[in-house]
Length: 455
Ligand SMILES: Nc1ncnc2c1ncn2[C@@H]1O[C@H](COP(=O)(O)OP(=O)(O)O)[C@@H](O)[C@H]1O
Ligand SMILES: N[C@@H](CC(=O)OP(=O)(O)O)C(=O)O
Image 1: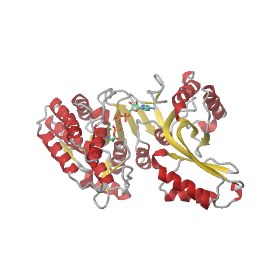
Image 2: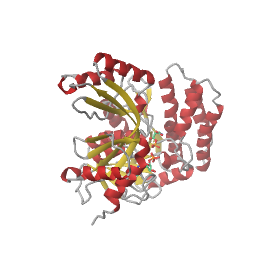
Image 3: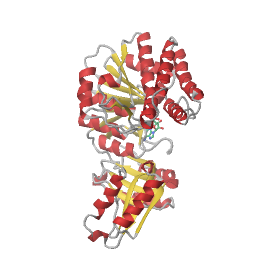
Image 4: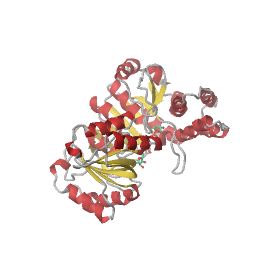
């Protein structure tokens, strides 16, 4: 059996959903269909998830929600009309949205998660109805009744181990095509929680691992994963095969084509992944595999992601103080901050983490504690950083890559604030100011890909 996930761009309109139906009809092994909320129909369009976030905050702020509500309903109405469906499905969707809006607002995170998740939930119901209307026996499956149990971490939920057994018991041996909404699950107490943005990829991965699928297909709007973001580098080289750990490193650092947290479930279950194009399903796509022969190119991809902050701490003889690092990280842990890298020197250390975890109050508390409790001579935050990562299974057998990368970055005139070699040696990260991100990506691409041809 195959699990096929269709991202927002693949289900953004009636025309796109008809392509999805053709893909499902083309292979009877495609029994599990995970769908996102309708995405962008064109570059400047808004994703339904973003419309729903606007709706949720309008409600929380006590504003009139009519305009936001109808912006969402009109999207589904447009799709339903395009698919020649009875508009009854739109009444169901409107009633569902009104019901969610009437929920208690006191738990803001729960309210926002519930409104956000309605995008996928209602799209799955609509697509299931459409499949049935064109002769594909299909049924919608609610993540709650399917047993997709997750932890109670708003907007960044993680599936619990029992979810896999639940899903296996409730999903396998199905005669119909199961249409399953991505992006959310339920806690053991029955609370709805969403994954991170782009999290429908995670749902597909969990389902594939649960039903022991022979393949997890991730349908999007590009023919393959490219060596660099095609929105930054013009016509980048396509990747035919990439390992799970290369894809995790690149996805985490900006390859938004696939969510980095979607890799572990299929990796552990040894399920191959193929990233394909809904608009060109015959293209081979990019296969994500456990291992691959390393070709002449040591670097597989280059990616970048902005939105990082650095906490810089200095104290003379820090290297002699046992437990200093632990105490510093303990302070961050108590502020619920996870971190990415901690490059350090003899008398100083930098902690790099995603800026969205910070608030001005947290920053002040951290600086105060680091200064008073750890007696640091200097402690301050710096913001607006990007992490540039070069990734490749061939890196650990290649010499001079770091020098070539640093020289390429120097050619852009940008300053390197931090360098970090991943312990697995399949990645090398550079911290730079985010204003330099794109020009560095383009220069690194020239250095490692533009002149290299693969025989
Ligand atoms: N290295 C990459 N390879 C391919 N696509 C990439 C890469 N980095 C970023 N992207 C972007 O990811 C987009 C697909 O992801 P997304 O917009 O989330 O689609 P979907 O709606 O299918 O989830 C592509 O259109 C492309 O612009
Ligand atoms: N719709 C949700 C979840 C998702 O995965 O979307 P997409 O498949 O379009 O990346 C979001 O926008 O985050």
